[in-house]
Length: 519
Image (cartoon, rainbow, N blue to C red; front, side):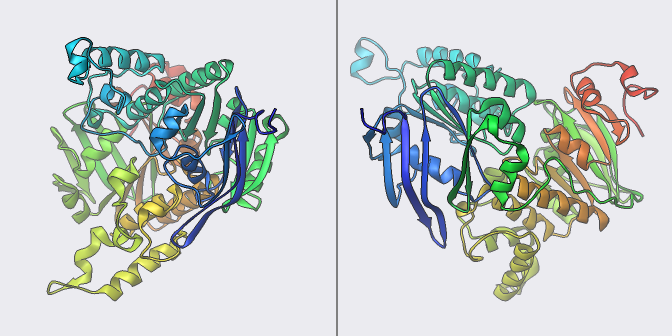
């Protein structure tokens, strides 16, 4: 037997360069049938690039790929799918104006029988029925006829999972598949991975969450700066060792950099905010220098509330006050004018223009400030952009680098830089560390702490309870579109938060804390 054949896939000496960046430098990678391999590293380490080569989205510059011991050139994503390689991307690969069913069966739609087959007509009824079965298999509570644009980020993620598993795959690549999911959806996904493993399907699992690595992976491969720096069984690894390999330095896991800031007077007040869909009668106060965490289950209405506040969606009723004065926010432009900024959950589609350079993305909200008599001051644009690139340690070879070529973590920093350049009074961060590595997370947390010390009020929406507990001064818990409670830092525990988030009302969990909203 060929020495390669013990592996379902083996990649040897894979290299890939982009303009100004050596993304991969002679990387080896392999996985066996029925094995779950965690592929980890900081943003920009080369994980997604390596997997995009395996699934045909990128062509390697050099190196060799073996499938079942036979050298193979993977020409395209369609070719990879034919080879039974399926991928769940971190950045969704869905068409927003089509249904979930159409996305699941994109380019392989079932055809009508009889005369319809000769006319090459799609059997929509059968497609929707089969798509619904795939959605139910992954625990997605989504009708197959729903348009992607009408689904939440978490629901879109589950459609991606259903789409990937609808193919009779032998190799499944999962790139940050849990980053937008709640705990229930994560457990369902892990059950699916266990079932795939039993069937002899190889799973490559890219994640930044240490607890997931030790729960689901048989082996861990570590990349750093485009090179493979570690490969060891999960049972022989420790979180500290893996982090040290990833970042090349000591970094304590699960410790949040939060310096205490002076909490000042009320800065941002929301009264009885109600939207057309989920959000109902939401009220709270944010003070200067305060980090107010928004916790809740998927579908609780946190992101919808943020979009209503920012004017990205039209509210039905409610009042907003900044520094005690009522303000009218009917659009994002109105929000920016009164000192409100939003770093959205979906950075690729809502936070960046991927085809534009880093410089243009950073200065977009403040472009008018760099213009005189209709002329753009290019030097001022460069100065402002470079200031925030330096301040946030954005890793880019130059300001003219297109945002699409940056790693996920550096793209996130560009979105943050864009809104910091607008000098906000209130900064809303929706899942600010979603899909970024531990080192970049620490930088984002440190930045939040610094901003709070300058008097900026921060609303942080996060699905990671350790992050909520570690970074928040107070925690607003939402359930089914409403404020279930607001907890002080001292009152909050994971159990208390989850009890309120799930709609329970056991007041004994928080001592004398009354049910409902705290002042």
